[in-house]
Structure formats: C-alpha cells, structure tokens
Length: 365
Image (cartoon, rainbow, N blue to C red; front, top):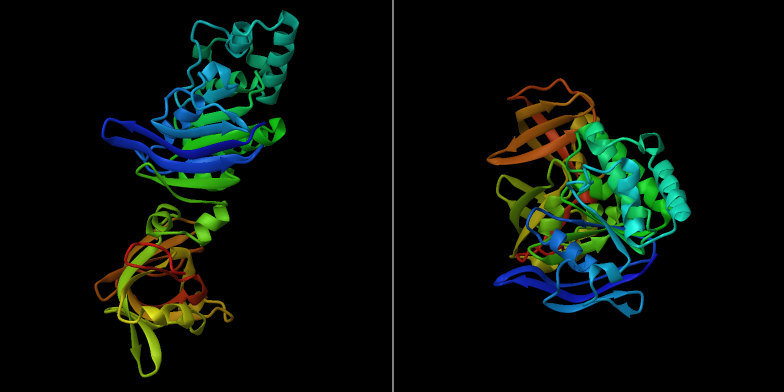
C-alpha cells in the first residue's frame, strides 16, 4: 500500500489541456474514484500516475518518493483496462502468471501466487482454459487477478466494468470492492458511471475539462455539492434547477422565479437575504419533492400547485414531470401512484434539502 500525492499535475497535448493543474492526496489503502463525463481527463490522469504518460508539469509522489519521471516498471503499479487485455494464446494460469515470469519469480512462488489470486477471484477452476472459452465477466476476473498477483503498491482501474452487461456490473462492483478491502491495496478507479462511483468509492474526485470540481465522500458529493456541475452530474433523475431572484416583500425573503415563487424558509434567511436583488439558481433533487398526500407530517415543506405533464411508472417508483406554468419540476416517488397527464396536484419541496448557487455556479447552501 502507498500514499499517492499529486501536486499541480498538468498534461497538455498541444493546446488541449487534458489535465489542468490537479492536486490530490490518496490515502494508504483508500479506494478513490475519478468520476466525470467522457473527455474530462480522468483516464489521462490515471495514465500519468501509472507512468504511461509523461506529465507536462507538476509532481507525483508515492509516499515520500518522487516518481514523476520514473518509467512504469519502476513504480510497482498494476493497471486493469476496459478491454481486459488478456493474452488470447495463453491459458488463464499463464495469463495470471505472466507478470511474475517477467520478473523472474521462482516457479513455486509463481504457483503459490497464481493459486492465491485465482481463489480470491473465484476462477481457480478455470486455470486451464483459454480466454475464448470464458465469458466477459470471467475474462475481467483474469485481468484483475493478473493485476493483483504481483502485490502492487497501487492498483489502477480504467472503467473495468463498462463492457459487462448491467446485471454482471452490479455483481462485479461489490466483488471488486470486497477484493480491494481484502488485499488492502491503494486503488484509483476511473468511471463515468455515477452509480459505480457512489457504491464503490471511499471518496470521489469529480472532474470536468481537466480540473477537479470536488473531492469528498459519496455522501458529501451527493448532499453537499460544491457547484452546479457536481449537483447536476450526481443523481438520477438529475437535480431540478430553477433560476430566479432573491426579493423582499412584506417583510418576507422570497425566491422569485415567476411561475415558481416561494418564501425562503426561516433557517435559510440569514444566508440568502444578503443576495437580495441578485439572480440565483435554486436546486432540489427529485426525491425531495413530494405529493402533498404522501408528505410526512414532520417535514417542513414549500407547497406549490402543479399539473402532471408526464408520468414514468417504473414499478418500485414513479417519476412525475410536474408543470408549474412553463416550468417543469421532476419528482421521484417511491411507490406507484394513480395519476395521469393533466391531473392537478400539490407538490411539496423539502425545505431542508434546497440548494442555492450563485451566478458563477458556486454553491451557497
């Protein structure tokens, strides 16, 4: 295991700033996820950590050792790729043993380590098979076994589950997380899938256009997003956003968005009254918007009249598109409801779960 420290790491390809000044500390034994949309620089950052890409500037440390310009073979790092990258002409045993043979380990030690890794990944009954005789999930297990068999300081994973079907991805998420805890290896995991990030990461580093947007626990990222991008990227359906003005009327502080206007809850007044006359963006997640007849009595809410515009019935939950004038607000209800397009309803926004963002998109609350 190792602590990884990135200090103002930059990687440019001509004028393209793939990684643009990232500083990050990964703790010994931690599972950290680099999360962001395609093209945000997360894979390039992973490759600079592995030594597969040379940084334009900045420093990379493993514990106290500066590894910025060390070749990959000198870093004791293993990497699992999206494409599995198993050798088709080698048996499962030889695929797993390959990095050990390159490092000239004794035969008995190779046998012991391959057995250990294969049993850990539950592929010890497949050692004599070849990749074309394996399912996608089995091939991915072989790739992971080959990565951990050398007992690396650092395990890097680049979207390793993206080629698997949905059910197998769910299963492999939990297995990879358990595996990481069992072998206690510091792990940096790249994905664009927020569900993977939320379920697997000890912490999540959200990236956009080569820059870090926020680093925190899944709970921090979800409940306390640092800006509009993070708030909108995490959560499904996406957080509702409405632009409006902070106004004062008859002694009350209001959020005035035309169709959707409400009094600011008392506990938020001291923070928001200083923005009087300014345009802000209010945000609230669909699961924090209720139908009045389903609201808990103890919940402090903002009540709004709306009309059902669209209904998505998903069995265990229902997604309601509620129209307030020309503004559409999406609510996620954790049960089936007998509503149809055109029905009038009263929805309630949980006042404790409201978010507000300034003109720059930075979080105020």
